[in-house]
Image 1 (cartoon, rainbow, N blue to C red):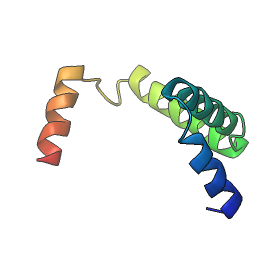
Image 2: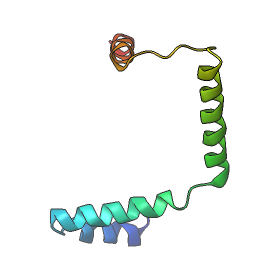
Image 3: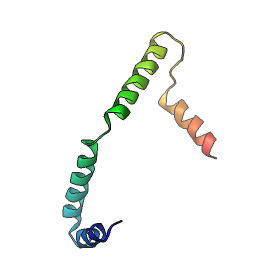
Length: 76
């Protein structure tokens, strides 16, 4: 982190919680608007591919509970 950014962070951390939250939301929002178009295009293609797989019955959806059980057993 640059010295300027470090100074800004130190000042921001002295703000009240609500102001820090607003500042954080603004910073995150600025990142979202700067998304790389190639990344968005890749995600769009992936979503389309997954939807086609579902529509063609190439894959079978599972319930949220099944997904949670699988994830839980995978990380244990």
